Image 1 (tube, rainbow, N blue to C red):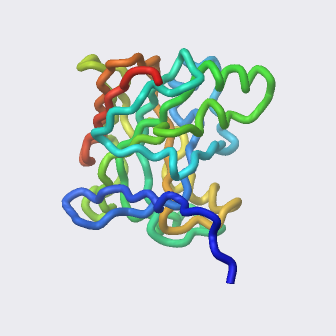
Image 2: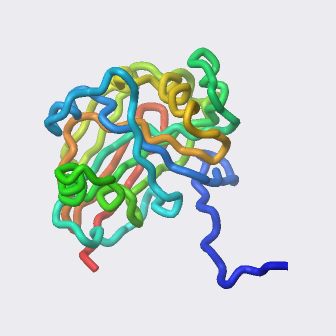
Length: 232
């Protein structure tokens, strides 16, 4: 029998609001340019033909309340607050009308982005991995079951930096709705329990610096807190 050469880190668990269990994370999918105002501030147009995605490793996850070092290799790291959808069931080639059956719950998340590295990749028509997929770049608060949160509608989504409002919008402003995202993404992946979808960020993204305290909030969900520490 083949045995492993070394031990790998355990599967990340995200706390569930008001419970003792954790949600094990398998994969992280992220939707790009899903708020028109954010696309405009980035100098881009919304692709209304289909959503597009990038991915992060599950080991990029970071829990609310953490103090993280300023990310290495960048001088321009940005915050992006997002609604996170946690799947609890299979979804493969599902129609939009049945897509929400795969949803288990929701959380408030922050996608940290090494904007300078992302920009360099865009200029050279290269993948965004160095700009997006790095340690502590997928921050997430405690998850709330879908049955407690209710339907996605006009809930406010916002992010404060050191007590100053930086991002604010409504979930209803998303270009692609959650069922549309799941239905489209399920054409390309066998989605299942343990998959997270970061659904895009509203306008107001901006740089963080060592010492910043970030607070993300979505009405009806547990808030998210993060402190940016010193550079390593």
